[in-house]
Length: 241
Image (cartoon, rainbow, N blue to C red):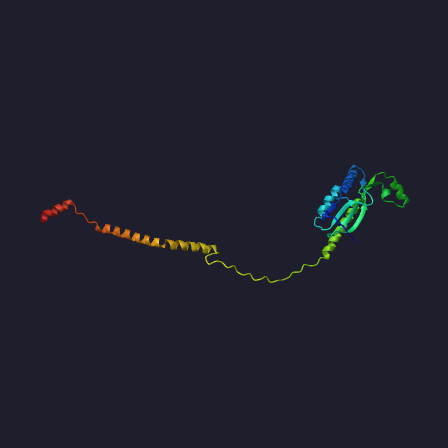
């Protein structure tokens, strides 16, 4: 088993390592778009007719988003026209390594499905339709399957999380000054008590003032004398004088 030493590896999903590999993949996509061949025996994404890397890479990225293992694509050491597809685990160890050309293969059914039956050869030789096949897509499909298998193995062999019950240390209560009041309701009551204490002497003066005013009013009402009419005074003078 080999460990891949590369600081630029993005763990998870799929990663094209070099610019030359990207250029070769774009070149293969252009060739496949320009061809009119019917592709057979190729893992083409659902809803598409041609094996385009620009389509498959987005689908693999979404499918493998939660997978810590990854697929690495780089130029092969054998040839600049071939790619090396590697499957690496979450620690960076290479598990599989396959060299493949991203360019499609073209031919007839006889080329792709050779048979020894003379009747079938005669019938198939009449078919002039051009067919295509992409071995690169099949290799990528195997690499993705390998990454999923590694994930299942990692989940199966993962040690179970152990829970430890530990008593927490006793928390000492914080000491507050006697003047600090923590409860807001008690604080409001204390404020009312302070106001009452401050206003108490003024309340006493207020009561004394009101009582003095009442006495003055009573004096004024009692000292008023009843007046005798003038005509009555004259009659009384005539009688008694």
